[in-house]
Image (tube, rainbow, N blue to C red):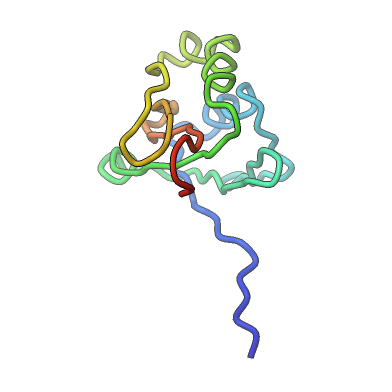
Length: 124
């Protein structure tokens, strides 16, 4: 019996599907495939599924973790691409966390909280 896993993907909710796709592509993600209600979104070897689905209580409690090599560069990248102003979002500068990461929170246009971070302590 082979129980090896290949990958796991989250279905990320989108209040305004087109606006969310625009947001993710503006910060550097690719969308190699999309239908009327689902999009395959990737950055390098990482990916998720963006879905045209929105329930406020669900989305307000949904969180994604994006582990990168240089969190400072990603923070500056997000600032430089103007997505904060364009989409009316909030972002905070990177900070060291007690769980061994340096990260910054970024809230997407639907209200999904992303924590963009890098390892600084023990491996996570």
